[in-house]
Length: 262
View 1 (tube, helix red, strand yellow):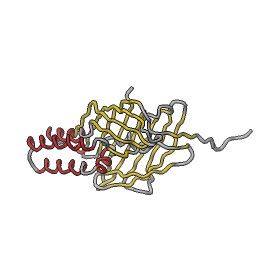
View 2 (tube, helix red, strand yellow):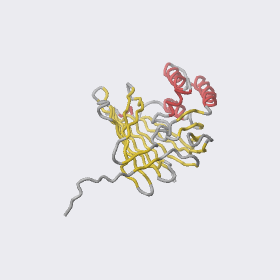
View 3 (cartoon, one colour):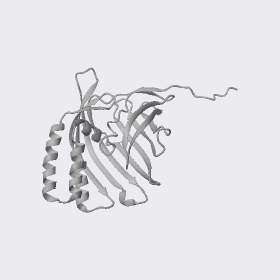
View 4 (tube, one colour):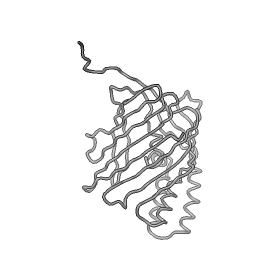
């Protein structure tokens, strides 16, 4: 009687960001859940993605994002703070991007229009609100929108569209880890996450990619989650990312979710 000690069956999958089509998503997040619950922020965004292929041998796509509904709530703060947070969250409500086949944002096609819209919003804020907090808020947004490169980094944050435009697509198998690096902005510092990606499940319907950070890279931050992608259409069906950050002997938890709306 023989016994199989190791399963060495190699399952492979190669994916790329959808070349064309439309999909609807719901993004939700609960950020920085610590002992002091006033730090907790809850976010919700429902949006539609329109995708068209470009005439460059499949290297890129034109992707239009249109937000249908969004809301940001914080456990503490006045109604004006909530209004300002929602204003910041709405800056990219209509955005046109050039996206690489692996999901990386290459260019913001309408970045000048976004700046123009922000100037109008800023004028209304300055007329309605006064004080140091408002000035700091406006400087913060101005800084995020200062250059197209900064805007891309902001769109790529997990609090915006970072779950969708994470360069998750590529060639994977269930034996070896693929390592990709990206920057995550924490409570008090930036972290370089070395992300290990491997196939956890593969069938005729979808592929599940497990992601986690190299713990040797940082003992102050843990990062893990999964991407479920439709095997044929290549659209992301579900993303779950959990992040724990240790700061001043306190643990802060953040959960980010993206769900395809059918």
